[in-house]
Length: 597
Image (tube, rainbow, N blue to C red; front, side):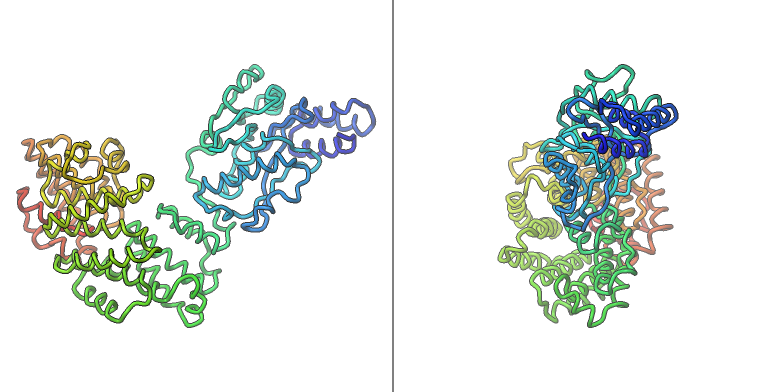
């Protein structure tokens, strides 16, 4: 490096409280002049009282010999423009640019975002220090994540390591010189030093190193076990919506949507925001919140908004989603008539026609009107099979048919469509697997095929098609709480199976894992229903006193906290349940099988 370049670079390192790195650069000049000596003295004075600032520092080796800590941060470029991330930074070599872009795309994947949906990110390092090599990858990933998620760094972090194709941290050269500089800068202060596996062999005595094999390990070491979400303020609404569209973690999506100042959006985007928020809240079980969000749409909807929506969401879809949210809390004959009337008026979109028929089928099923429900589901299946864009939804329809066939007592239809569902299943789609398994398990329980279900779960059934999904097996063999749909419904059915197969201890153990503290009323009642199954298992064991306590506690919660919310759902049989005086399984089982799902 030229003398003037060294002076400029050392000044930037001193301002970042990295005096040892600045001094290393100055001493490498191998010459003496006033300006160099002045800065050497300044660096020496800073060594005794300077502490590195919290942030990311790349450990690099200039000219292959001089270990230097280089502060790295990020600023925003143009949203979605990847080239803006590195194009104007000539002090980064092409190798380092490639390492940075590898980190950039890995961060997109880590945040479950489509490629190119993160805003452009520009790395910021001291302008006069040339960055060269793959070792910039690890530090770059940490700096990008900190920027786009708004996650602060409480300590100084010193990192070196290349990012492999699958997120592994790969070894890099000149480790001894880099780690010696990390020790010098940290001295006796707190900080984090990250390096690839095996780096400790080159570390100076007294330096604590965290060796990492993967980026996930590095992230945990720096940020802890936090939930990463992109800072919504960094993304334009269209980019954010596109990134969230295929995300099945509904609670995460709700958090990200709430980070947006909806009042600052134009009317068309406001309508889309309320639409998406309502749908996601409904999926989390917050029916009241879904109805409130969807109720806001009519206040802003006008012809201008509808015209603006033409390319992204139709007025028809808004109407159907609003109706779907209302249906979630109003399972009544009047609501059935409203949906039938909407279907009779005609629907433009094939997708929306399938949607309304599915809603009507679900409502009729919940009302106990099983005649015609299978026909509605089969009509949807035929429409989806003839529409390339809708084939991905066939499994959802088959789940409904399998479950409905069981509720109708139609064994032949159940096994016919269960075989089709098994043939459609995709091994890698664990989210869909959970619903497929739920339909199979609950259907076999309603058909009272307890032994066949037990055989299917162990892979020994010759009659039940397919195999249990990974999610189902993990739930059965796990130890944690069960608290989301469809796992709660599946677990309750399995409690019944264990009880019917003479294994009350297993039934009680599984019921104990179902979380009854859910805040959303319908989900909580679904969880509480499992406790009635548990009480019957206790009776089976001869623990009548404890069983009565479980039943009375469950009924107290239901009638004191949940009855008002569920009063419009006929399948809950409020009057019948209120008259319950014992734990007769012939009384309870039909009631539990009819509960709204």
